[in-house]
Image (cartoon, rainbow, N blue to C red):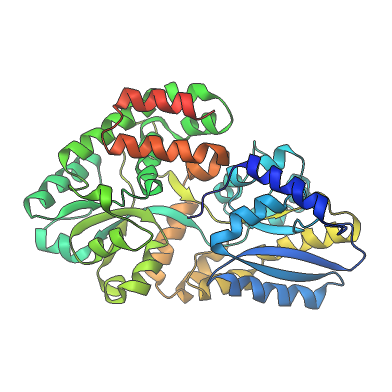
Length: 429
């Protein structure tokens, strides 16, 4: 999960690039082509295929640039506003593009969606809305959904005579059950604070509802004073003190497969993680992924205002269009992003092991390599009244370091619950 760089650094480099380059940039060149950037990984083959299909139908051709994943965010931010900026580019929606939206660098796709109601209806509404900035659509969904799921180890549960939690009391009971068995109740990669953020996101949502963070995301810092935020911090302290994450979580990582390996090897019973956990387990512990991995939803909380069907995570990735495009190139760019709504694109996602975000994908799920898991994910997202974008993607990139630091300090006992709330109010503006 990539984290965005600060806009200040981007604008500094952008100024340097503008001075050094003589290219006419997006919309200004005479050639009939579009420069499309995508995050380069194993899923890029889906975008390669759609480029080939599009180029067979359009006089304006797409040139696909596959940017290495570890440098994608920085390259995207340093290029925007310069002659080297892409015409269409991959992003995470929300905070990852909010600075560009404020500067008028992106095409408002709202009018396109209004003129083409079939396009708007093609996607699950919560997915489409999650990528918006201040309720304005700047992105079209173009990859699979990525909700945060509560995974569990089937064998560990079977050995303990336990069942997946359906309530918060069930979850707390399982913490005590697995501790007695010498098993860490929840794997947690404490060296990677974005994994801890998932707990904060779900707890705030379940206690206070999706509106709490939506207020914060829209610039109303009073949202941090909502009782749900303090209650979340108190609950996390209680979970840590209860031993829910074991004793060594502060030194466990996710990026090097630390938490996932502990989970797969039965050292931990459960793991709250994004849906990509299945793919990671398939790659590194294939036998476990095939027969030992279970999944369920995050439970409701006693007295909570949030709908227990709400979901958090990364709804998907999006195509956005550079506002400098004019005339036939702008028209072609919009036609290109529309290809993500077509069924052949959804079929390519399925073949890649992803779960599409299109509203009519149900009939395709049996073609997924694990249809049961695909249907669970799809129904979970489709039925969710709200899908909250991960906070470190929804907020401006400048807030990410402070957000991660404050959350890590809470989990490590360096901030009290009230101190955590005070830190967020001071740091996230």
